[in-house]
Length: 381
Image (cartoon, rainbow, N blue to C red; front, side, top):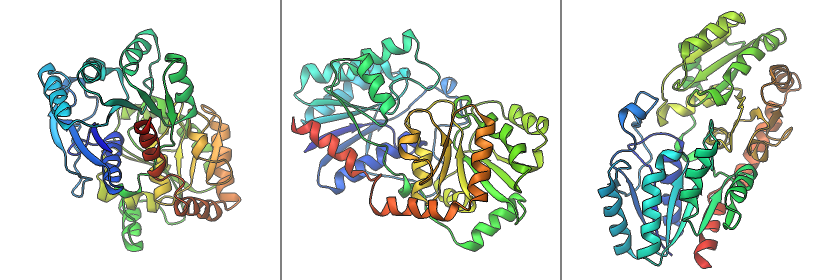
């Protein structure tokens, strides 16, 4: 099948850039002809909440790509459409996750529907933004997504949202695939070196909160839970990721709850080559999200063999199976979260849950094949 894929990739950073790159890589590996188009620029600097949208990795994920699109420049929208028409693909795969992309994606999908015979597929990383869902968000999402011949989502929650938003739409669900190719394991000496560098005592169990720190990720509830955990276990919380919220707020929070000595903040975007040591150092990954659809951090953790403690929001409980490869608790409940963390260590769940994660990797339960099958199914209709 001939495809055109449009989305972020290196030099841009983050989960969706990794996702789109890996999707193209795996589509090509199974024999599909794929032209990949990306952005000359994603956002104006004043709109981006982080320090930069560029990936600092020395070993980035890269595939062959042509950089064409600037979402603030309509001339580049037209140029991209002309290139896609010349490619004469069977299918065009577009990425949707926030309303910012409404003008450019709406134009592109309408132009393609009018001037080509290609089917248009939207992969919805979020049907609605994490901290949105109001009338304007719904209006912009429907304006774009109704142009697609089919939508692909990654959770039951987004499946229901898409069907409520566009009752006539063809919506397929495929679990978010693994991100294990982004990072590699490290050796014991490097792990102990990182522990020493961070000043974490050898007798402390390590909890890892990883990823951009944003309000919907619920870090404050993990900090609230920590005093209850410390009463039972010597633990250390490692918060690794660039803050898109006030770091001072969370630092004050640790002081208010008397756990400042039990928390280390690493406030920066971590390049690919440093991911393995942080995950290898951790005993468990803890993601106390307040809202979510799915999480690339969960799939990164599973890809590196780590169990996950998380909350029953969005589709997280669909992949983190309570008592099997992790533990699931209600959101915004620091007591339940603390009990789950204590239980994980007191009942010695690390070994059996790690084995379950490894078994799922061996069975390819979170492989890219399922997503590719959805794309092929749409193309065959």
